[in-house]
Length: 81
Image (cartoon, rainbow, N blue to C red; front, side):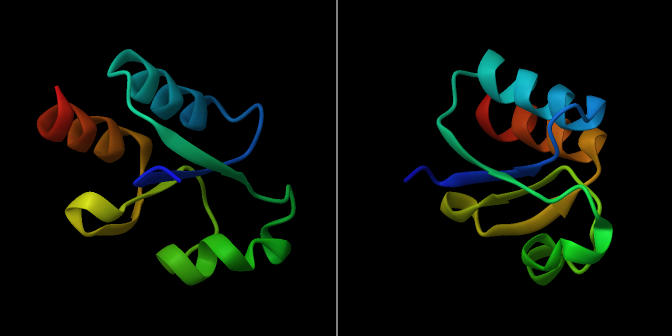
């Protein structure tokens, strides 16, 4: 199991942006696909306090429930580039 977990919805352009950055940095990560219905996204809501995606957890650095693709990409660049 990787330290980084990405919560995403297939086809989401913001999720694809984060995935692309993770791949560019050659980071290992786990993916959890959330349901299309916001009402069914209890797992990501428990982690981040909201139902939007993308969301990442990075256990190695104590990051839990980071959302907003631009913030995630910036964090990944600052931490792993």
